[in-house]
Amino acid sequence: MIFDFLKYCLGGKGNMSRVVADIDWEQLYSFASKQAILGVCFDGIERLGKEYPNELKKNPIGKNLLMTWMGKAQQIRRQNMKVNAVAAKLYSKFRVDGLRCCILKGQGNALMYPNVYSRNPGDIDAWVNASHEDIRVLAQSLAKGKGCVKDESLNHIELEVNGVAVELHSTPAIMNNPVYNNRLQKWLKRNADLQCSNIVSLPDNAGDVAVPTSYFNCVYQLFHLYHHYFYEGVGLRQIVDYYYVVSMFNVDCVMFNSLQRELKYLGLWKFAGAVMYVMHVALGLPEEKMIAPMDEKRGKLLLAEILNGGNFGKHFTKYGHFTQQGMAKKYFLKIWRNMHFVRYYPAEALSEPIFRTWHFFWRKGQGSV
Image (cartoon, rainbow, N blue to C red; front, side):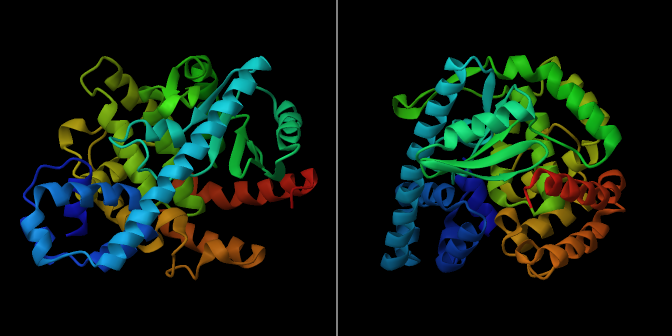
């Protein structure tokens, strides 16, 4: 029933009379909060008020719950406006400094939503076409005054600017498996210039930024889901993002066959099938819009992980809250969890603990741990 409601929130046209009559609004709120899709679901509720007023009278949303939900939706709107302003300001500074860059995911994804303010905003991911050393200097400069540098990894540096979390990426993606990672880095370099040239305007005259193209996002954001699947967990907020990415890609265009070849070459083909299954079952993506055939076996595993862990795996109970443990315990819990994926994604799952161990000592050498 919740999946039927989500399909409706994303523009589905099915009859919602039975859903409205029987749905548990408290349970829906809890689910939407866990999955960080409260804004999207509130848009659906507003639509129900116009299209199914009589059914809502029979199974009304409690006044306190409705006011709480409305307040959350307003918070999401205000936060989006704040993040838009910071993103535009950062992009403008990068361009003045002569740096080529683009804003990944986040506020670029929000532009695909029917309501550009309904997406729960996260941090700002900026792909800056510069060396890691140059980005380190840039981070220190940006953090002066109303900010601070927080953490550093192999491909990005985390900081805070005017109360908004920012990640500066020297490369937007790294895979655990060295063969696939080598292919990925070459692919990213080939596509960097085009992404930094794709300019869009943020809402309410917040400013202009560069965002990735639809083709690039089909590959990159699928990798992003894949990465979080192994490291933390994937939530429906990220799946809804990718739903809009795929929906906007024209599967009839000449680039479609090229896209499928890229996914296979980069080791993302099997995971693409799992994601298509989840988007079909939970969000109603039609088969004619899919970029890969559905993989039911892997898809059911992915969906179970999404429902169990919620946004970024913050609600996992199956793995003893591995994302919230101390470093040593977290290390072994992650290995134990990822061993469940070996039969489905052996190249990445077997490489993950090796890469993570190496990365830990690299960060230690950089003074990041």
